[in-house]
Length: 124
Length: 124
DNA sequence: GTCATTGCAAACGCTTTGCATCTGT
DNA sequence: ACAGATGCAAAGCGTTTGCAATGAC
Image (cartoon, chains in turn purple, cyan, blue, yellow):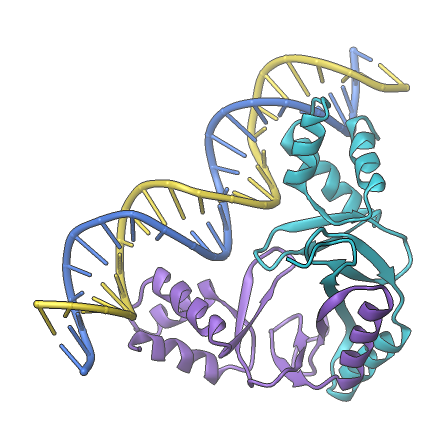
């Protein structure tokens, strides 16, 4: 199923950064694409459920979305512009599993994000 | 500065789990402690700023708080009851720094949480 | 008496939902 | 014609804030 849903996926694919629903909405609108905020939210939710985009939460609780590869990976994210690099972390995967098992926790999972300021972003 | 702020810290210290502001508020009220929701939020914010409690965000964006040791550490968290174990992860620290540097990101930071179901929680 | 803290209710920001309309097949 | 997608406005939910009342020293 599709429509302006394509537009959203397209907008996400064009960026290598995590974007918020509100940002995407504003960008699409100011680019002349007529679209409703609710549609953006619904599309992002659908895409996230399907595993086509990754979701993460800002410190303030806002959800950020990014078009991502399907296999398991983590992110290196610029705190300033949001630019993101996918990184593999096999060693970390194994560490997380070992930690869980050692403490008697079953069904292990983990979240890992690395932040920094990318080289294209100004000093302060 | 203190008052029912002590009560909140006390309630947090008694638990080894991450709790939400709303949960803490409900618990204190039903325990007969008169307190306002805004006070709970303000106290938690102050404690977090002072580094006396750790904060993390639920998948749904809710903030969870836990009394924590002061030095850097990560958490192994039960998805069912919230019970949390602090874990060291020196290898992961080094890995995160290396990843950031390798991609030209400065001022590196990272978040790492490990989730599971603790041995005291039922199969489901 | 002074100044920070508290409590309540109102305001906020992000997200979701109800519902009527529209679109694609 | 039908099932699903859309848009809008209203509702929801966690969190924050304005302000008058209260409490600590």
